Length: 183
Length: 73
Image (cartoon, chains in turn brown, cyan):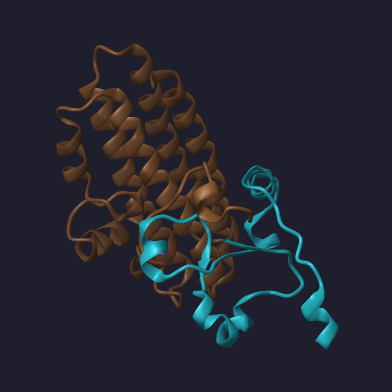
C-alpha cells in the first residue's frame, strides 16, 4: 500500500495480535465459542444501555445507542440461531454465561474492555467521545473476529466469527455516520 | 522463482484503493500483512491485518496464501 499506515485515513485497531484472542482457545468447540462471544456481546449491550441512559437529553444519540442495544440483542439471538442451525442442538447459555463470567472476572464487552471502566470514563464526556470509544471497541472486535475466523479450527465456530465480523462492520458504519455529524 | 522475478515490478495500491478493496472483499479472499515492528502494530493497525515483521517474513511465508492477493504495509 502506497504510503503505508500513514496514508491510511481509515479506522485502526489497537493491541498485539493475541490481544483478546486469549479468551478464545483455537481448539475450543462451537458451544464454548458461542458462549463466550455471547458473554462479550452481552457486555457490549450493557455498555450501550449505559450510554443511552447517560445522554437522556440527546434524542439523536439515544436513538443510536438504543439501536445498538437492539443490535447486540440481535447478535445474541443470531449466535443462538447459528449454533442451532450448525449443530442441531441448543446450548445451555445460562451455564455458559456463569462459566465465562468467572473466567472474565466481571463484565467485559467486545474488545476486552471492562464495562464498568468504560462507563466511568464517559461520565464527564460528550456524545462524540462516547461515539469514538464505541468505534474503538467495535474496530477491535471486528479485528478480533476476523483473526479468530482464521485461527479457529472448528468450522461452525469459524462461520460464527465470520458472520460476527460482517455485522460489526454495519455497527461501525452507523457509529461513524453519527460521529461525522457531531465533529 | 527465477532470477528475473526479482526485477518484476510489484503493483501498488493507494490507501483509497485498499479501503475499497477491503470493503468489497471477504477477509478470506486476501492476505493483509503488516510488516512493521510489533510495537507499531500494537499502536495501530488496519483491522484484520496479520503481523509478520519484515525480519520474520522469510521464515513465515507459509502464513501467506500464494493463491490470494496480498496487501502489505
